Image 1: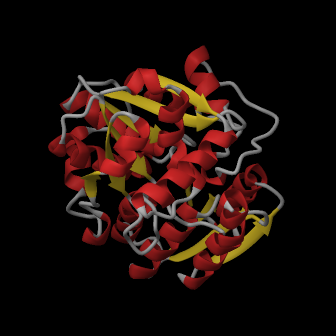
Image 2: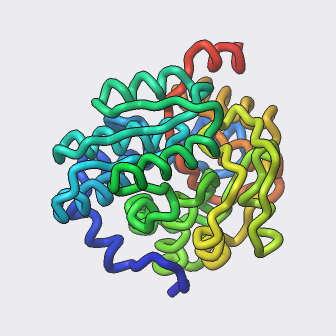
Length: 317
């Protein structure tokens, strides 16, 4: 059993708390992708839910805990997907949610945060959003929800791992790496229940902080995170999350922006899926190292589909 902050029994119990709309997401072999990539490819589709990403699994646990303790407000910083999910989970339980985000986040994500009833405050970048969210939480005396640092976000995401473990075996599972909730959650479950599965975290080379940290076995920060994969564009890894990732990831790799765009195109043309750039990181990793994956059965987690259509058209057309 990996030595992380996560607990397998709590992860299993989480399925009783999470709204079923977020559970048991589609998982299927995609033969057109297999022919294009030279390996068996299973797609775990975390977009067929009201917030179009896996984040609802974690925010359901957060909001459930807040409601049980009688807390009625929360604040978070978000690149877009967490804010949507917390807004929806909070609304269902009468919790007032404030989201701080970058004004440069995709407009579609910002609009959906508002549509789910959250208060939205905009600042100039994501790191400033984290600082402002912490400030608001202190001023108001309410819960600051910190993605990946709060273990509920990791254990909610880990339920994806339960579903993969029950459907396997897989030779490798490719997981988008940003703050680390999805990678540490899925990794913890697979190393507990399917230890022969290789867990590979994938990050853009233009936002490499967590991957560099994994290889250095210490926190490495970066001055910028200039990638189309905005959902994973952090610059300051969280030490506790890095410790967990070191326990459960077999490898962490970086991919080029051109490969991310190629992955987006493959999902559209071969699988009929419109996904956000973070969700294409797994395919990008296969494209850049076909020999490593040749003939193997690979599962890739499609973590989100909240795209700005104008930007999407620009990338692909």
